[in-house]
Length: 234
Ligand code: URA
Image 1: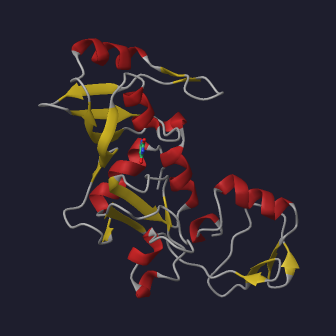
Image 2 (image 1 turned 180 degrees about the horizontal axis):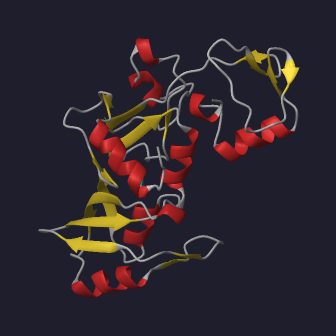
């Protein structure tokens, strides 16, 4: 019930329970398999837990919106959440740069969020890239396929194989299965090109919605598809 209500992944809420922080009807419960009903009063520390179901949305993030739930100065994705959903503890899954547009998933399902961003589950994320510089070539396609090494910071990062598809002029489609900081921009600048526009089109089976900046609930088909990719059994 805790994991299903957005209080963390299954393993995180298991820790809360074994540390004796969770009470049911004022009694500390340490059995992770303890079942609760809707009438039970569940608390973590002093906080009463509202049982609720998971919610899943997608949005086409506009340019100049920060992937965060609050910021003192800049517009954030929280500003795109309508009032009736503001109390649902929705959070963005992973992050898009301030100037990256396109598909962002928002949910209160901690476990799904974790799996979608973990490289372990190999979820494909596809980006449309417009760059400045000489057009990339089939040689680059091969290098991306073999796995690039990012050495532009103190930390050398060996990337997993990525699919580069050349499009007309200075555009390409790039599919990756991990999400290192500014990964796409860094992969492209490794070859002396700079990204002018970056747009995420797809995550696994989920595609960017048609309308920009408007939350759209995932359909049953989309949910079933993504759960299958993430090995989440229902
Ligand atoms: N890679 C980037 O460089 N930026 C993003 O926003 C997403 C992927």
